[in-house]
Image (cartoon, rainbow, N blue to C red; front, top):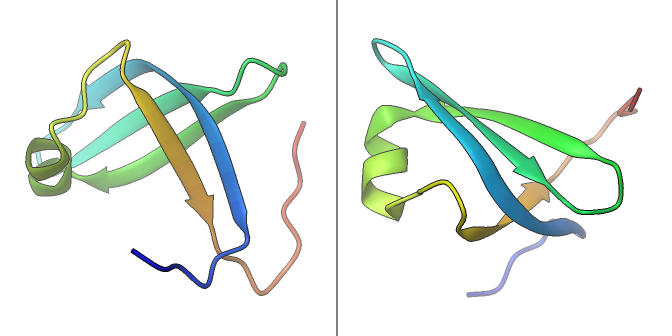
Length: 68
């Protein structure tokens, strides 16, 4: 699969918190950065995302991202 997003950070899934329709997936990239993504529960199920799995956070942004 080819992506136009240039910011791709590999990490380990440390939490998958499902809500009524949306899940928050937390990925630790091992470099001191924790990334949280909000995606649909359907996407979590289709991608079979589980704690401990390796995942890529793909970030495509046209503006500024601030990390704290």
